[in-house]
Image (cartoon, rainbow, N blue to C red):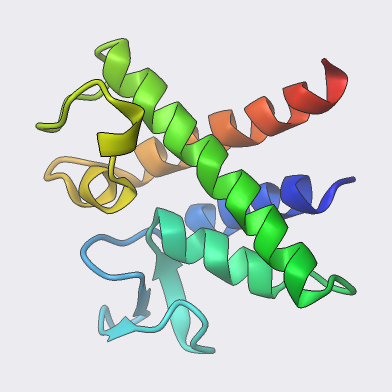
Length: 132
């Protein structure tokens, strides 16, 4: 399995454990913390990706950064797709460059399942690139 696939699956597992808004991570008591804190119990989309990148075993720092870049690009692509198709509207243009992960994550009414669905689709898109 490629590093980006492991990272995407790891991020999805983290989001299923706990998801948050307005900060990269939160402790169990809902206090904000860094995404890499040992007390973190919930993450936003980017925080989950960064935490999963840090957790890749036996991968160089350059390898982790490359995998993270691939996963973040896949997440941005999925957010842009959802926005363009009208699945999600949150005050931005249909321009991929203007799709902001933090704005999407922090939109009122967003639910944990929404974040998991985005990460799942991003993971599937990465896997499909290998098969293509």
